[in-house]
Amino acid sequence: MALAITPFQALCGFRPLAEIASFLVHTPELKALIPSSILSSFLSISNSSNPEGQAEKLALKNVFAALMTTSEEETKTQLEALLARYSKGINEHDSIEIVDLVQRLASQFPGDVGIFCAFMLNFVKLEPGQAIFLGAGEPHAYIYGGTFPLVKSHQQEFTL
Image 1 (cartoon, rainbow, N blue to C red):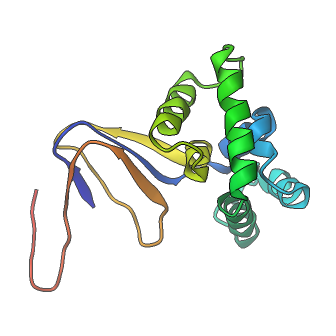
Image 2 (image 1 turned 30 degrees about the vertical axis):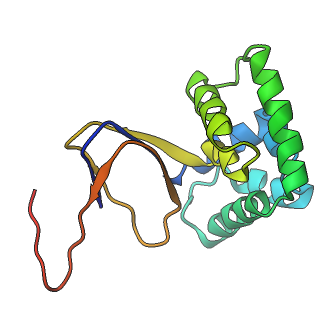
């Protein structure tokens, strides 16, 4: 658990499968980073009525693993293409919040594959005093601001 002590932004946990699928379909630069067999498998289950099912989890794991293991060269190529497209204006399927986030991350971490996580992970904004809990193994990245980690141990209790 993290408690925001300043305005805080992070990428935390995976977006709903259908939302990720929409980004994969409508963002050609992201789509190009995922092998077609993995992409097809993911898209076929993305509207599942059981998003927590084993097949759904495996498809999400495969998409995320494919993204995170993309070659540095291919990542840079697709990121440059994405930023060039955004500089010409956004289309009806682009989210201005995602566009702004991608551009900001690209200026801070040029060429980093993690920039594409903006399409995979929830973008969370907290104000001071608000908190967020992440379960073990949940992907996350702090983007901006400060937090105070709240950890409950066998030796210490905490209250808010």
